[in-house]
Image (tube, rainbow, N blue to C red; front, side, top):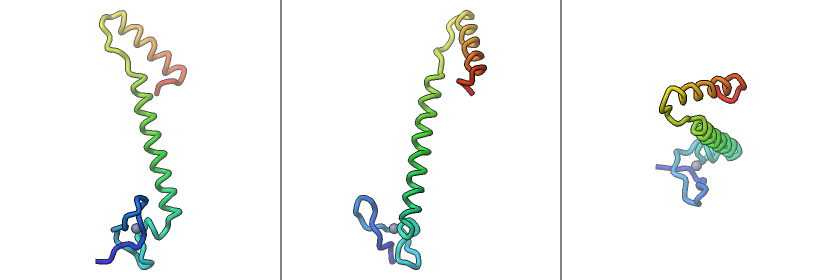
Length: 85
Ligand SMILES: [Zn+2]
């Protein structure tokens, strides 16, 4: 079965199903493929950043009512100042 005549970034033959041009959809439009790749890189970076932010917003479990009160107070203050959503 025919496969795409393009090559992957690692230099291997692309085995994707080719279109009329002989290239697969990724290789037929390299610019578009690249921008898709950049977009997904950015999405990945953003997701990692969000995960980091979420970790930073994780509080230690309250051990007593005083802890709970201060955590609540801090959370409310953060929400009010737009630091937390
Ligand atoms: Zn290809």
